[in-house]
Image 1 (tube, rainbow, N blue to C red):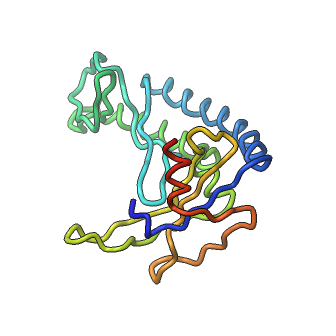
Image 2 (cartoon, helix red, strand yellow):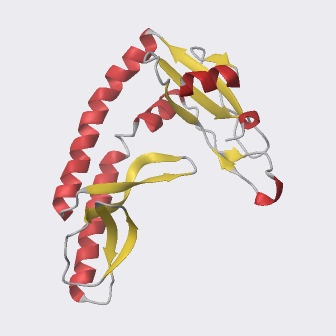
Image 3 (cartoon, helix red, strand yellow):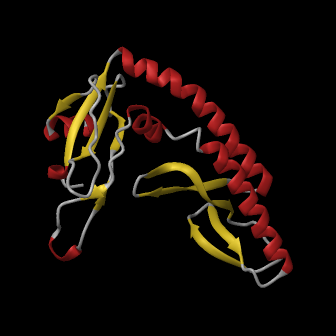
Length: 194
């Protein structure tokens, strides 16, 4: 994150409590959709889409217990000490059937999850402040794709922070809500890290 590419804001007080209350009903429904999808395929967790403008609201893949066995060859997407995200190799009938079940469960869940976003997406959508653009050049590393960042302050629980990319020729104009208070990068940094 290059500080010069963003403008920083905070909201705090009663509005944060109202947002948290509104999101709690979304969070519970979201968790139920995810649990149902995991149960349908026998997974223990999921990997979520995180990319330019995507903040983990949709399922990308399912993860299974590391010691789970399958009666068909698999290809690993990602793994850690406890779980392995995978798909079946499509060279067997059982593998193709397994992949079909995975895809159907993912599609069904993601249709519901589009309306049950993560907290970050909830905040960005609520205030319509998503901005995806190209950041400033970083030597020979090429272009950096940047998008709106948001979340709670580290220790001040009634404060929500936003880092919104500065508009340039590659982005749409963002209308900053009146309830947003502009802050310096230093204040933003302190609130995030203290």
